[in-house]
Image (tube, rainbow, N blue to C red; front, side, top):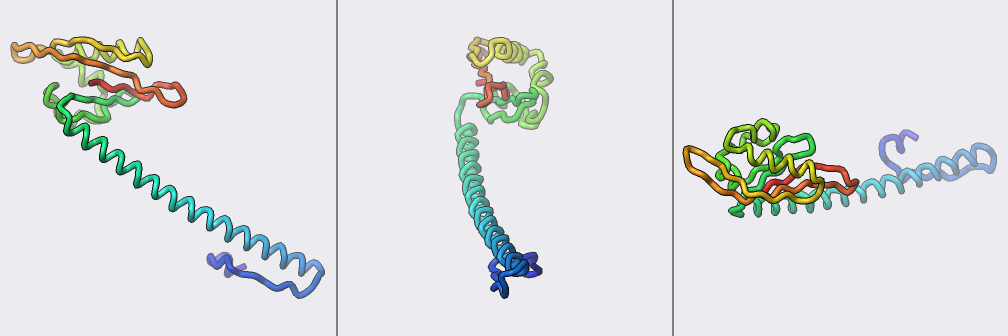
Length: 167
């Protein structure tokens, strides 16, 4: 029992009799075998989880690299209304610092020149999963910038909203 407790699950006792002690010995051997089988399953599952984690991490880096290299601005917002990503193009177009990540979108887009973007997002909330496309004019330092904006709700497998993407 001490050996099994120490993690040496390959213990096997030879029953010395056919009485209760023999039955107890067989039960002990069965338990040790089941523990060893369970450990092997856990080890295989751990290896598989690590492999999947590495694959997900590789995909995440790939997607982040694409988002950083495209010239289209992309902002993602989580279900609680916090900005989760803003690529370089969006930060430049909207004159925002990347430090807005983690900030409430309603506060960030409350800035006078960004209020049109907030209205597009509100339209997405009202229309559900259907994308909202709208031209937005941003006036900054007396100059107008025209943006074609598409806001899309992110809906999870459960059908519940998980956030928004603003392009």
